[in-house]
Length: 125
Image 1 (tube, rainbow, N blue to C red):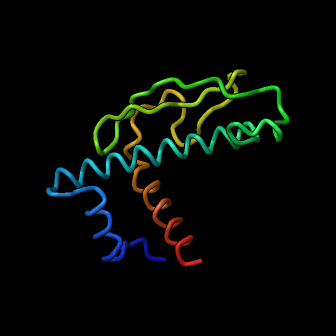
Image 2: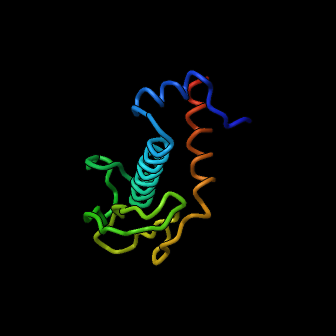
Image 3: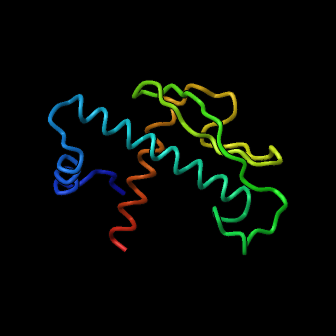
């Protein structure tokens, strides 16, 4: 399976992000990557707790969300601040960005490939 964006997708990305320079591309990719990481973290805590945020009807645990802690991570795009979800019982341990890990540059390509592959599959379904 190929993970290449179509010309139309690239043009839409350029228009949507008002890209005028290489620096703009870099900043847009950094923002996209940060949003991806944050989404992965949210999905991980939902999986860990067994229910979606605000879905108390399906909550079958005494554990619940307990805000966020900020963490600065080093990526190929530079440093970025992420909001790491917490749970009340302190059991949640993110897999995408493990506790105490600050340099995640080696996993970036894998994460971006997963995102574009997933989006490509949902588009053609």
